Image (cartoon, rainbow, N blue to C red):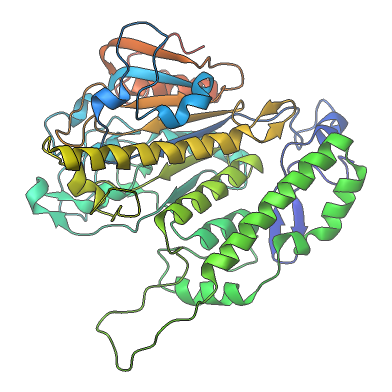
Length: 458
């Protein structure tokens, strides 16, 4: 079997390629010296950014011990308590005394000092941990890394915010200090990056021809599963019973995402006024509601990890200072960033709490998706490390110390969840990244302003 369809060969059809989940039959058929087949599922790393801080007393539990009572912000994660570590007293020292938001976003994954620039000479102060991983081990997968988000890149200078380029707030992933890695915000384009081969049109949300190319893709209603069906049928026939169950679940997930994409992009009946409104028509492809957009992008990230199309991902649930209208939440009126500056006013403070907890709910959705997928007797979450949190402690005061940070997943047996770990005050957040790098097989001596690996994670 491994001679016909290897783990890294993938399923291929005209103009499309589809990576496969880990399969025991393929792994067991591999010879010891085979370089095309993995003997066991790989370890993945994902970094999920949440904006505008948290309410500190709703995030950090009372007491000093490793065990803790679930706080209001962490309530959505209660069923996953044994699957994540709550990490306390981590910070990025080089963000202290700077603007409340803009420089803290690139520094979140690098620990670098972000320069105040006019926008054409960006300097984030360092390469981010995800991109260092991509440089070191990204050649092992079809996509070295995968960057997703929900909001378009901002432009201009925030003169009221210290003179920083707003672009800083749109990127948590930096290939080097001067090169941000664009995130994809259009679900169909993100999906096509996973399953379209190099023969298909290369499409990016930053490409001016993107809308036209997207329209062309919309006319092509063939499923990726239809394109690769012959090889898929052979693989299913010759796989083990466990593999057949896993493949059926995997293909059904792919089909489900495809159907949701088609539904989200299908033109609806609408009122057409005569004349021309003085605004260019936005490109197609963004679902109508924030919750649907969020869940769809998270599902695509899950597929990217599960299919081993990539092992390194970043996800921005929103950009810095996002003022997206969160009125879709009960009791909330207005933009998230404005609400975060609640000035202890009870009504606005309650709205802020609701917005923050909603973001944690989205993380819980993502983690539960990973936990539901089996990989050789372990879950995809067991074989992952998912770091999530914010670059500031409190949205109202922009506090830099004791950032809200958690690390989920089993790290292939190297992480032991269900605990809070209280490190010395002002411990570099980069110590966590150095620990993750080593678990991913990248044995760097240091990263950013790290002083060593975090102890006690396992």
